[in-house]
Image 1 (cartoon, rainbow, N blue to C red):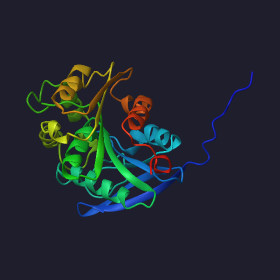
Image 2: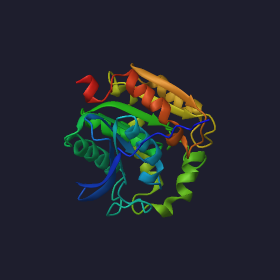
Image 3: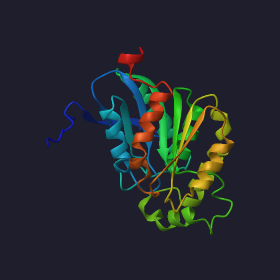
Image 4: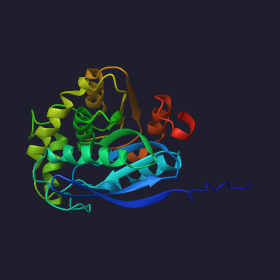
Length: 253
């Protein structure tokens, strides 16, 4: 029996950087050399672009462009300068969208993220009309209301040593301010992804956020925990991109 090996040699990954919030943000741009929609991916708290790398690479293998970058202050990443303000997360994401849109191959932009990055993606989409679609993985509302008891927030406190600058209390409050405005994203399409084994953000919490959003919207429950949700979401993400019309420009014009 022969085994078919998929040829991925056409995928290019380029080091990129752009100015943001008075410093430099660095990331990776994944593409196959064809005009396409670009998905800008925002990682979660205390992580880095490596957390969304499998999804970014899969998108490139499917003919899309993806941009994954490191938020300022995240020591597992490569971007310069501490995270001076929690709101600089949104500044970084908005500047990433603008950077992607300037690329010759990028015709349309979608912003997405995981956990903290998902809430940041909401804030960025509220500020940037260039984001024509939004992908939200493992995120919810009302995290600051019960700060000490919330499992996700306790996790943020435990990992604050990995982030140089704004603390988890400030970041949580800022993210709540964005998720509260979820309905304002309409009429842009939004994909919500929840992990069935997510012990930090329960699927019911993501579903509640989905219920508060306007149409058009899609909810997907996948087999994943909090950490690997972005990687395991790659098939539902590409299916949603195609279903909502974000085909690469060589087909869609």
